[in-house]
Image (cartoon, rainbow, N blue to C red; front, side, top):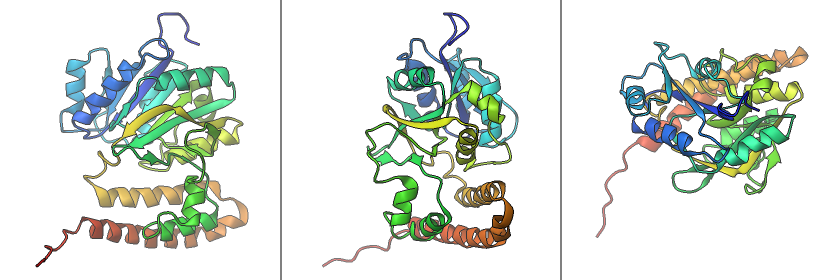
Length: 300
């Protein structure tokens, strides 16, 4: 609980990079959600943006603290910097291209207060078209990781992907999961302290998988709470550098495997590196093909 009745029950850290007007919308939605009792303490960490988005928030929303580290620190390091600048017992870490619906905090903050072993909880995430993004997932076994990695481009509902993304679970029911998306996750500060925060060796991607894995290793639960809803514009801040993001994603996957695999399993790391290199090339080709202009349609 807060140290006194004037302090917020929760804080929010928004990691910004070239989000444009979406950043202001995100911060406004966070401040407007008073369903947990009071508006949150909001901190924006600007990872070296040049679009003026952070400056616009600083001008129009003076209650928001904007941090300028002077460089692109990556997601995990920026999250830790923002968390250090807050004081509430619950802290959310958010992408800048999402909007929080009123009532989200009222569903998430009380759960963390009531469930002493709940270290992290994620909301239901909707895409802009209203569909549900599968943000609550399983740690994939090697078989599922390979199947999802290869078939996901052409058969998005293959059984490997279904297991990994928990596509057969009822999205309207709360449940415990292995990990939730770092695009929007509410965290217990005491739990974060036990794992030393986010692992800053990840620049982008998989840092959320790693964090939830570390929390569960230390006895904390990770939950999914559909009573809280956010809308996320997928890739709004990463679409400007798609091939770098694909590279970073696969580099982070290898880092997680090298961190998690122990004993004889480490002998398979060269195979994992080769597989991830092939998959990164396929992902780049898939992206290029999807962006290729369609030829004109001839009718008549």
